[in-house]
Length: 242
Ligand SMILES: Nc1ncnc2c1ncn2[C@@H]1O[C@H](COP(=O)(O)OP(=O)(O)OP(=O)(O)O)[C@@H](O)[C@H]1O
Image (cartoon, rainbow, N blue to C red; front, side):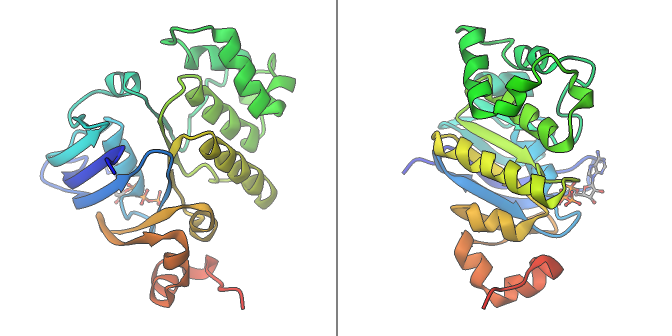
């Protein structure tokens, strides 16, 4: 199968000569849900940024739909069918829910109303709050708006950077259910998560990052069932059910 996205031997960082990603390899197939986990500072968010063009790789290759995208800017990458929801600042706080969705669809060629209706059907809570300022939404509602805004472009690949960050356990469950629902519509999702156990439970596959490389990979279940990975990488959050 042709991979939707391939990252090959990528080195990238924020400061010249200091690589955070140190020869990382990664791929995702069409429609897959792939979790990226690992300790703090492992380079998970940096990988997401490099894929989305927020960081230019010093070397290596990034291919999306069979074409090289290494060095392209985010606005060019969006046009090719990829969206990214950052960990923070993922909505315009001063704008209403509706305006946020419209901003998300600014490069859409089709009907904005039809797209908004689709998002409101997927996230009914956003429909109820369509006139409310995004800054007044709860953490979970904001995450849903961030995802909804990205979905306005009908991407083939959605990158979510720690969507569960700073959410209460109840909201985490509801955001994760939404992520699964989005995936079931056929969209591939890269899920960068601190909440490793939950992310692996619902992922088709996972990558464990450490020091900027892909230390381990496998199906979500394989990674969860591997006691060494549990002990080393899933930390205190990891408790294997008997
Ligand atoms: N803008 C930046 N400028 C310089 N260094 C940065 C920048 N952003 C991240 N880093 C550094 O890159 C390394 C990897 O950070 P990254 O955010 O990719 O890790 P992470 O695996 O996502 O961690 P966490 O789970 O804590 O979010 C860290 O050492 C971090 O300090």
